[in-house]
Length: 171
Image 1: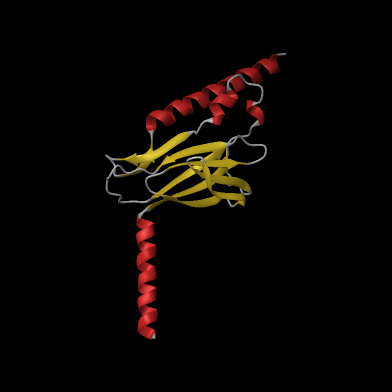
Image 2: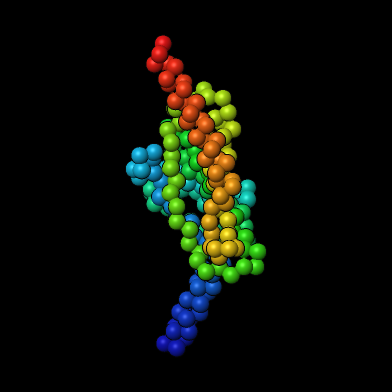
C-alpha cells in the first residue's frame, strides 16, 4: 500500500512538473501613478477571445498561469482608473525556455484626467505593451518597438492634459 501511495505521489509530482514546463507565469503588482499598491481591481485573462480567468476583487499582487503557444490579453480595471491591457504572446517558435516567469508592474492612471481629450479612447483602449519571447535573450520580454510607440502615445495624451489644465488656469 505504501508503495502504491509513493508511486501515485511521484506520478503526480511528475505531471505537475511537466505542466509547469508548458506554462509561463505572469507575476505583476497593480499600482497607482504614485506607485502605491491598488487592491480590489478586476483582473481578466483572455486566451484569444475567451475568458481564461476572471477575478472581481483581486489583490494588488497577481500571478497568472498561461499555456505556451497561445496569445493572451491581461485586462485590469478599477473604477476611477483607466483600464490597462497587456498583450502576452506565449509562442516560443521551437526555442528553449530557460525562465518561465515574467515579473512586471501595471500602473493604473486616474481616468478623469483623460476625459474629453481627442483620441484618448483610441490610445487607452489598446494594450500598453506586448510581452513575447525574445530569442536573443532566451526569455520573455517587452516588445520594445510596440511599447515605445504606446508610451509615446500616452505621453502625448499627458501633454494634452497639461496644456488643457494650463489654459484653464489662465482663464
